[in-house]
Length: 382
Image (cartoon, rainbow, N blue to C red):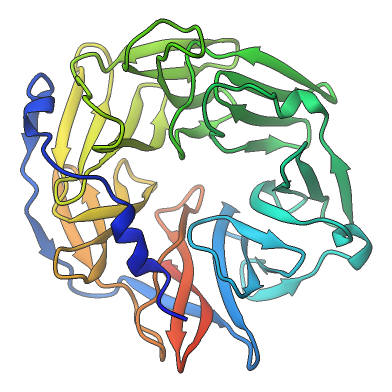
């Protein structure tokens, strides 16, 4: 089996966008310097003597609670989704990582593409899509249950893409499907229309239940105006509204480049990644007075982005020479960190998660050793 991540470089978009961004504030210098001293380290390797193992997704609800999930695979899957029922689920309790396994009865007849979200060690949701209504596996700290979601959560015509679920509590969950926001509260799913449709993956992120950001895009099919314009949408706990337009970006073709994923950092603090091959950039919104600020990224292409817990960002990047790195952006300065090495070499990073209340960050992904993939968990700081 060939390396999974190298093929991801071919998924990035073509170049030629400097003129498209002329109306955005002047770019910040993108020079980066190498870090010295302690930084990232590998903290656990999940391996099998007989099978490939991939860790695809990690979430953290605090310093003493994190979940890393993937599967025993072949074929193996790139990115932060995974397949069940051959899932591997590791839990961090603040001291050690240990294996958690849902009962066979819960996993029976459950198959499809899955992702994991959690709000605490007693509220873990695995969303499984299998071409119909999603199935949810839930863990309450003691037992697992299985529920098939109602059809309202999977509209037949959504006019867009799945923005990814958000979990804030046992009775506060969001799903997104194109033009629709589906909210679980008062023990019922409620569907409402967004101001415009979600049309890119990774287009939703949140700081809290009352501070959710989404990147929307107008389109003819959804009946939400015409054209090809992007907007930033915000949920303040009561309603969705358009906060900022990106009209100054005239995008000639969705096949040329993409906007997203996004990072929410506060009620007036929103980041959008412009994923352009050889010329990636960030757009940063801090309020109407400042408008959009463009920040160029000293990398060739970007695959993961997460906030650092201190008004900055971590990015997993590729350089033009084919090497990867973990880039940190803080107060206008870029610092480049090496991806920590393992006996199989440096892992590819499929998912990153900031640890609430800290400046530490988790990451997971695969490394290749002697022809077999192993799941790797990495961490920045303690």
